[in-house]
Amino acid sequence: MYSTPDIRELEDFLFLEARLLDEKRWDEWEALFIDDGEYWIPATRGQPDPLHHVSIMYEKSLLRAVRLKRYRHPNAMSLQPEPQSVHLVSNVLLDAFDQDTGTVTAHSKFVVLEHRRETTNTYGGSYTHVLDKAADSYRIRMKKVELVNCDGILESIQIYL
Image (cartoon, rainbow, N blue to C red; front, side, top):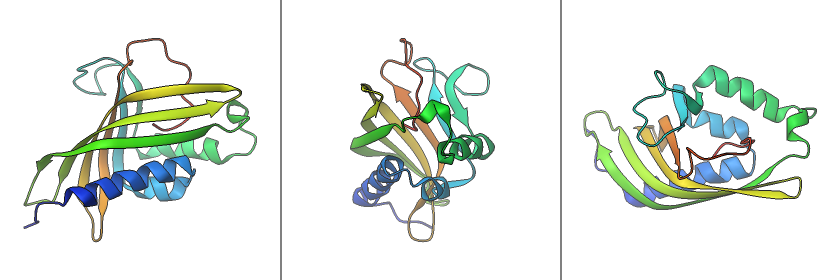
């Protein structure tokens, strides 16, 4: 039986994830996911699932590995020059908690700035993280990124949000 998580512990985990993304510490970021953890950006508001609807992005471990290999490659033309980002995470709330499994659902808000080639793109919206309790922290079962402008015209997203 697991005890109710401390909100500060959840914040620390989400802030660490944002830092790893900004610092391009890809191996450490990937290690935050369970073996087949999901990363999902729905294409419409209220999209019920990523499997029966088109998504902006939907990745499990294999597709993340392919993308991260490209991010690491020094000759990836679409990443020249390399994009820089700042992830700001706030309003972290505990939405659900299963005492038997330790699974947590956390909701937060975000703003991400991406700068590349004299252009700065701004992304904002909500995160939903489904987290499994690990020995000393959490691991990501699912990260859902709900963009406030998901149904608008988007530039090619060259970073993880």
